[in-house]
Length: 137
Length: 137
DNA sequence: TTCTTGACTTGAACTCTGTCTATCGTAGGA
DNA sequence: TCCTACGATAGACAGAGTTCAAGTCAAGAA
Image (cartoon, rainbow over all chains, first blue to last red; front, top):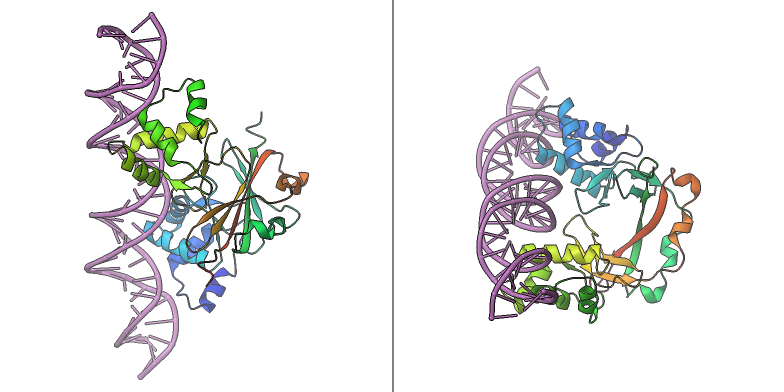
C-alpha cells in the first residue's frame, strides 16, 4: 500500500492524517480487519480519529477499488487491502480465520449461458470453507 | 416445501400455526427473503406473529438443513428454501435480484493442496455478480 | 507567507438487523 | 378433559453501520 497515498492524491483526494493512518493500518498480506478493528488500530496512532471517518474512508477506498469488502459471515464486513491481485478466500468454519487463496481455472467459464438468465456476469467470488489446522485437532 | 411440515413433525417438532405460516411463505424457486420480509408476509396471514418467532423458526429451519442462509451483501441474511439441490447464486450488482444457478465443474477441485494452508476444506460457495436484464438497459 | 474555500472530520443520534429474557399460551400426550 | 413442557410474545438490548449539523484544515490562489 506504500504508493496508495500517491495514487489517491492523483485522483484528487485530499490527503489527511486520518486517511494516512487508515491506509497504514491496512497493510500486509492476509489482512482482513473489520471496520471497528481498523478504527481501534488507527486510534492507537491517532487517538482522536472518529468511527465515522474510518467508515467513510473504508467505503471510499472500496469504491475506488483500492481495498476489497469481504463479508464471509453475516457479521461485520472485513476489508482486504490485497485488491490488485485477484484472489478468493478460505475461511475456517470454527474460528473465522481468513486466508487469501488462488484457485486454478476460471469460475466464470463454468456458468453456462442458459444459467445466466440474461445477466451480464462480470465477477465470481468464491468462499471456501473448512477447518484450519488449529481447529482440526 | 409441501412435505416440510411432515418432515418436521417426524423430527419431533411441534407444529404450530406460526411455523406453518413461515413454511408457507418460504415456498417456490428463486425465493430469497430476508427475515423481515418473511415476517411481513407471515403477518399478512397471521397478524399477531412476532419477529422473535420468525427469527427462531428460520434459525431452526437452517440448522436442520431445510433452508439455506445466504448473505450476498453485508446486509440482512436471506433465506433460501431450495436447500435440497446444491446450487450457487447470481446477484445483480445494481438492484440485488438473486437467482439460483448451477455451474458445471467442481470448484473444490480447483484449489491446489499448496493453497489450502493445512485446512480441511469441505465446501465452496460461489457468488456470481453482474447486471440483470432490467438494470443493463 | 497568508488567505480562502470547499472538502474532510467529528460526535451524537439514529436506523437496521438480530438476540435475549421473562412471561404467557397451547399442542399433543395421559 | 386436563397437564405440562415446548413454543410464542413483547420489549429491552446489542452490534454494525449511516446520517447530519457544525467545526476544522489541506492545498491552491494571491
